Structure formats: structure tokens, C-alpha cells
Image 1 (cartoon, rainbow, N blue to C red):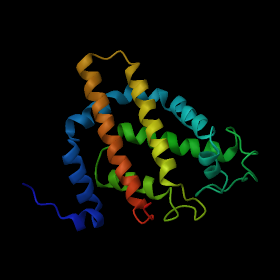
Image 2 (image 1 turned 120 degrees about the vertical axis):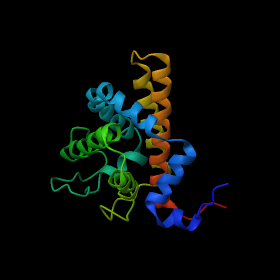
Image 3 (image 1 turned 180 degrees about the horizontal axis):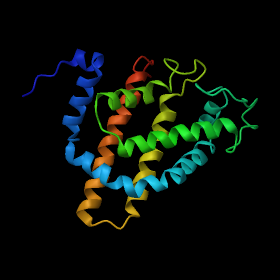
Length: 195
């Protein structure tokens, strides 16, 4: 039986990611499967981004997080939820970032720097990083990750892949998104738990 330093799981990002990856079974074969699908997925990233933002704009609880100034954006900020449209300059800025994230997810080397990036993706959605006005509740992050997961699965299922390749690819993305999910939720651990 392996001995796991549980305190270190909270303090050492690489140790945490390594433990979770081993526990889930995310390995080199999964990375190969993800990278092999990149050529099919990359051209679809813009349509995936559009679908994600259309979904986010369907609910006030998710759309409201795009009204405050986004970190790194210097342009005009909408004055209300109703004045924010999908073609707004700030949303185009955000879409570019989401597209870059999806591109990295399917093509990057999964090294220490990338693990830090995945962790930052979680942190940037809280007041710990980026804009102090931006603090997306965990329930909305979970909703987003669930939608992204389903969108990726649906897209991959549309590919003409041999059965074993399809299964390996779907399993690899499932594991990767669970790892990403952990690197999001870890930034919400200080929240008060309901009784």
C-alpha cells in the first residue's frame, strides 16, 4: 500500500497532480490519445467556444460574471447585463482566451508548466487572481465543466474513429477533465460547507 502525504497534497501542486493522475490512471497512453485527436478537434475549437458562450449567456447566474472588467481587458465595459451581447468586444476577448485554453488542452506537453496553467485556470475564476470583482461560484464552474465535457464527448462521438480509438480518446478526455476539475475546486475549499 502506498503512503500518501495528505498535507503535501494541499501544498505541492505537482505532488497533487501526480497522485490524482496515478489514481485516475491518466498516463502517457491518454496523452497520446488526446494529441492524436487534436488534428480533428482543433478546427472545431471556434464552434465549441461559440457553443459554450451561447450556453453561458442563457442564464443570468453565468452571464453576470462577464459584466465586470476582465483581467487583461482594457476596452469598453458594458454597463449592465442586458447591454452585454455575444459580439461585445470584451466577450470576443474572453472567447479568444477560451479558444487558447481548449487548444492547449488538446496539444500541450503535460509538464510542470502546464499543470501550473491548469491550476491557474481554476484560480483565475476566483478573487485570488485576475480581477478582484470576478468570483465565480463553484456551482457555476461545475456547470461549465459539465457542459464542456459533454460538448467534447459529443464532438468526439461525431468523428469516424475505430471503436477502440474512440473509447481510448473518450476515456482520456474524461480523465483529463477530472484532473482539471480538481484544479478548479481546490480554490474553493475555504468556502463554508452547508450543514
